[in-house]
Image 1: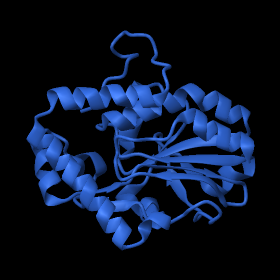
Image 2 (image 1 turned 90 degrees about the vertical axis):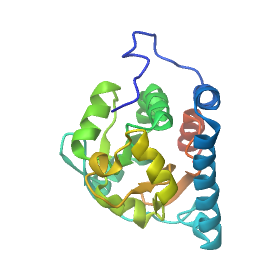
Image 3 (image 1 turned 135 degrees about the vertical axis):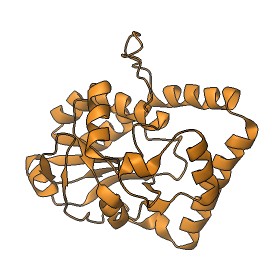
Image 4 (image 1 turned 180 degrees about the vertical axis):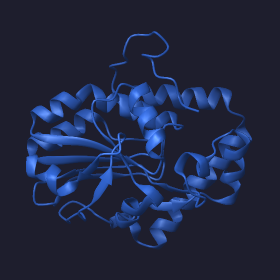
Length: 232
């Protein structure tokens, strides 16, 4: 189960701005996905936003706050430490849902296009998801990513960032009917996912840029992230 990349389909790499790529995917959803199915996702997003506003969770880890240190295995099972990464320079940390999500795939491929520029600006890029090491390996290999995919088992790091949430029952039923088997993909039965988020972290652990959106179809533009690295 995966979203096929342009490279796999034999097409040239899509170097358009991420907003255009995501707009195309939203248009495809609007055209081909039944209205009642779209409504389930819309209600889930609205409910999650309301819950987070009520809990004042939207301010979690804003610019200027310091992130927790962590050590997670990458897609090859190699342990990766935030302390080691920050010794090299700044860190771009991207939380995604998984390889089954077309919007996550689009974001990862777009970030891949600027990975060398991020490194040239003195930062390291890493993505984090709750999917198993095997799923992360498949995603890294299939989409030819040039940066590590870190395995956040049980969303432990996402929870520390205030990003973890449980997929509601209505959306669970929909995922099951479309063969999005999160207990298999993530290796646990919690039905938890992270809210997609991107952080630029300074060498002292302080956040320089933060973007988190309950609407998984919206992601920050890679060049905006690159500008945040260079401007700080």
